[in-house]
Length: 355
Image: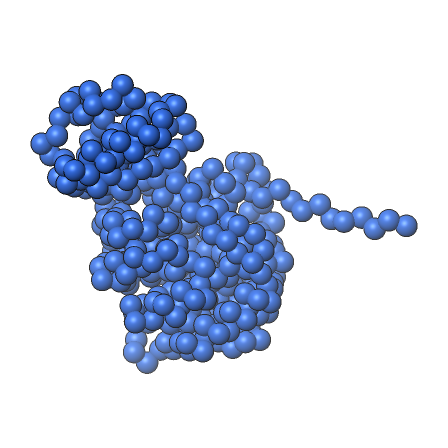
């Protein structure tokens, strides 16, 4: 249930109402929008009459029930307003939101060595990426496949962050590693295989680093949003939803089926920002550019693209990785579409030397 306050409602009245709701055994959560303040009521509200609540104050404009099973995640909970996930990085503060330019995240599937991760970070930064992705801990289908270098790879990510100024996104697989990873990562990734690892969701929800939540390989949209609800319910509102392709009946030509229709669907259901991962979504480097461009045209808030200096020798996911040169070209192609839909950073003006 949400209580929508009128424009100009005094803070003292919002506080008074919140205190009153607390005495009823409810948990009030204040949400400050661009024009109005909303009080979200979490708890047993089944027997509450919205009309009676509306009579509690002349400053209450409307009282609405949130009908979706996911409450805090729902668009209704913020009275239709999009949320913003703001992440400080060494170079700048970056915001993931439908009202901001598309954020580009790029880098290898896994961190292999220092030279490789620093070279990749510098190349994707020069092309326009704002975040470096790279796995220190890698969940793999086979127990014999490369699992990542673990804690030593975190040190290499920190070195790449220092060398490039990019923010870092890396995956957490185990609650035991959470604190150490959070020391390096600017955004914590919960991968597709852990989307319904509820103990992990609660743990990342109890800390304050933003969380990138990837859709499970066979997850419905509602299951995905309910997983995000776990994180918000634990206290962390900074969640980014990442579509990375789902498992369907045809795997001969593409690794997964990239569900781009999820962009308008999520936009209607949730206030959380949306990311698209065309690398995992297709599994083939030659398909990544077209799907990345389609995602920007469809309204994504962010892209995650795998880039490796030598995909043929990558220890994981080489077939879906772009070379740095191809990534440079893709960023120029994306800029054309991004500018057309008003979602791209303004081009940098080259400095002119004075004689």
